Image (cartoon, rainbow, N blue to C red):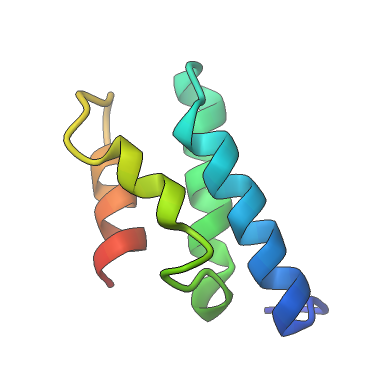
Length: 73
């Protein structure tokens, strides 16, 4: 992805996942999840594990689809 090294991309994905796991604002959560998706393969299972905390929670709009895409695709 762009100019991120593999290590930098995974750290960024991890930070975004931690923030998303505790985010209360739906707009901010959407931005965080979208950013993780945009990181592509740099957002590996280990770096986005905190997103699992959101699975099964009631979420607005397409956010459940974002979570599914991050964790299962």
